[in-house]
Amino acid sequence: MAMQYVKVFYDWKEQTAELTDEEFGSLIRALICYANEEEPEELTGAARILFPMFRRFVDWETEAYEKKVKQCRAAGSKGGRATQANAKRNQANQAKKK
Image 1 (cartoon, rainbow, N blue to C red):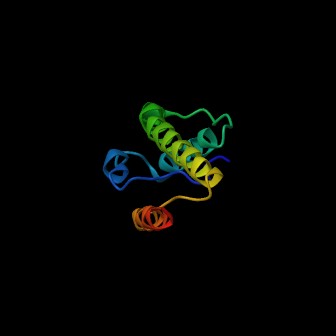
Image 2: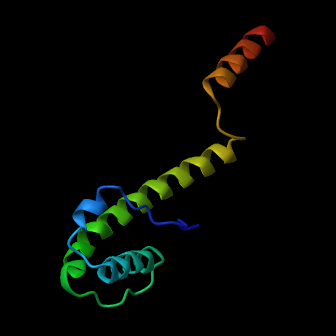
């Protein structure tokens, strides 16, 4: 399952300050297309220059999301994620059985 969002960081406001609202919108739309594995429209001006840098953030977030999904699937296949309290309780129960 792919991510259903694109994270926009607060500091992008400063990094995109020289863009017009139209350029900013085009940049965000291009990032959404990229994250959705669609071909983004051709960007112009500063948005074209910023896209590769912002695309890396999308890649990092996607990798982190996929890693978390993989960990959750592995935990789920073992009956769920054990918390520290559950792990201690399980150890205590095992000790009582002996």
